[in-house]
Length: 118
Image (cartoon, rainbow, N blue to C red; front, side, top):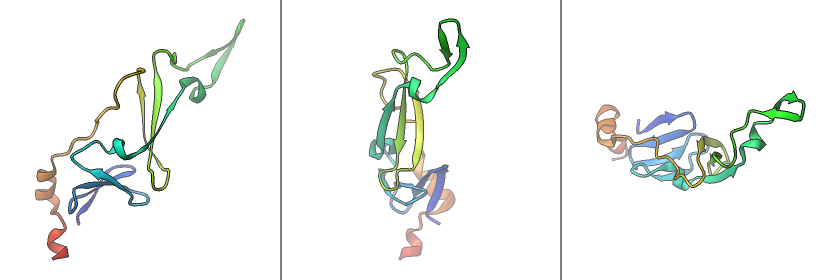
């Protein structure tokens, strides 16, 4: 079988060497590149996500990271809007390339599926 699960919402098709959404099968580009480059991106203020937690004399003490030091970056499938990944990054930091696969080794282990199509 040429399609292999890589993460909860991310597959790789060894026949085409492309990333795909595991929910809707949307093509997310070459597996030699960062799949996040093909995703819809939302950068969020940590205070939107981490709500106040403890009441203090001068208001609430929150557990959110300081927005001057941290942003929350969400990556969504452009086909079905499934949330695929979330990163906490300092402002200005590039998006991480967290998955790099040795495609040749994966093909040796599972095949490419190209044989089945012939």
